[in-house]
Length: 316
Ligand code: SF4
Image 1 (spheres, helix red, strand yellow):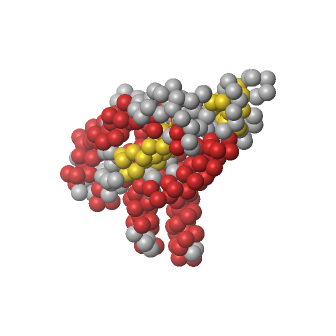
Image 2 (spheres, rainbow, N blue to C red):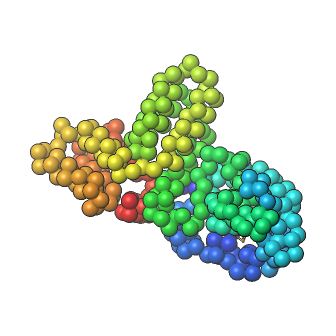
């Protein structure tokens, strides 16, 4: 598995006392589990833009597309100060080569989804995005991003961490001056993973790669990464996974005995009916891949998209 995966994180989620009230919002899954796999780069936009701890609470006001950051009681407008910080910090983060960012939900600075934006009437719409989260997403549109609250949902968590590892592999791939041959190798390794998320994207990417040297290298890589990361944001449903499992079986069915085939089909069927999680058929498949040395499958990212110890496929 890859090492040195750097992930940006809202500082209060690590237990740092940077919140408006001098407290923190330590998230145990982040500090006790993910910290064993990722190197966290903490950012507290409110403190780093020069605001004190403790400080007056703030919220977003005005147009949800272009909101202002204003203190709730004294109505001090911190928008310009925060925007200046966001532009500078988003640029600085380029040096960190982040593979993802985990944001604190609901925050007017750090929240990623459905942050409250107050209108003139005092009514709030849950349509906003924290100013710093917006700056990061604008500057790094391919970067996997998520909120800590959503990481408590098993399927969102599995999807996010799968994207982090895949994006990190892509970043490492780019660092090694990839030529067309290396792109084909990368693509071959990710075919089943793409199929599990979006057969349509797999087909589009297949056509792109087949166009080969007719496209300039830079353009080819840019189009490839856009499609790759877009595909992975789509949910790998049970139906799509079952399709991939049957496809995998096609690669070694000539090796399997009648009993082995029947057992594997039965287990895939149990997964299709949600009697067992995805890890069950994949464990048996992994056993056969090793037993029969099926080289095409041995290298597939789909079979090992993230560390098994995270147990992400035990719950999807
Ligand atoms: S939510 Fe963001 S701005 Fe607020 S304390 Fe946490 S890191 Fe700082």
